[in-house]
Image (cartoon, rainbow, N blue to C red; front, side, top):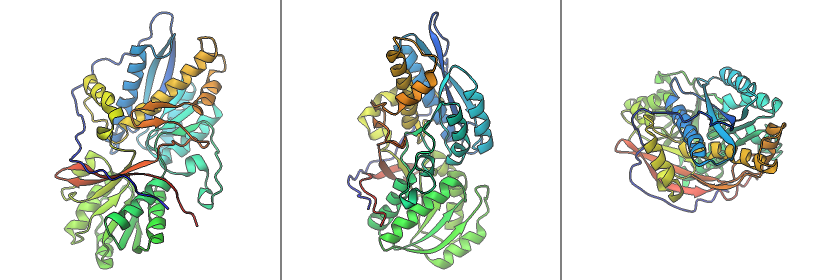
Length: 407
């Protein structure tokens, strides 16, 4: 089972939202080799708040490496592409980035469904793909992970976000133990991430004795939830759980409350955004979990927060700022090891060597200790529960995943 161990209660979180960015510091110095690190995220569209935070945080890591001369003889350049949260666009972006001989890694994407379309391109071209946000277990452990038949199908894929096996179980146990919920109505958006998160939540909540009084599937493009509201109201749950992202869950929550369903809505990291609150005038009291501890509570993140503010980005770093910086820095460290092992220069088979190096990369990052297990998953399994309080997300409880009982 999941052990919820370390409680944390704080005031509201404040995300930096600064002025416009000045320079990108991407120009290479004379005599230095330029190494490209690609970035794939939705920087336009409904999920752009998260995507822009990812892009900016990757840029900050690149700028820091160049400024400090982290890898001797190498200047890093970020090539950021917009996937619009669409799998086919993500695949096109991965193909384009992999076609650049100077590209040694790709940071992203945000969406697990997009990652599925990019993994094969990454594998075929032997280029590292590392996500700060993907949480679907299948990506690293194969489709039969629930049967405990875990197989790493894509050796080039890594992530600095823990999986929904952890997050969904955390949410289910948090609802049962901390919120004292007995009955829940579960809704998902039919996307890879939403379905997986909802399934993991139901499994853990049911194991503990909770009752699922109804389920519903919606489209991520839906904004009119009258029919769903009627079903939920009739079921009389103590909580509504949503597997999906904030563009739909914000309106869903408001319509539920307008329709007389006064219980909180809870979701995962796809809901944890300041834009969820902007889209929902009745967000007060709702819950969301997110991977890791809030960076505002981590001593290891103080420099990241200060540097991000000083850089002048106009968008907040949002939920994945710290994990994106760490993902980008992991690629930089893999390049560094590859260069060091080859007498101070990139070898002809640099991409393969960078992939190999990623498996042994370890350092103290923004989010804590950064390292990867045999599947390419992060070894950091901390999850935090947040609640909307007075117009902002406030952290309520953090716990590290200890053991999952699959019996």
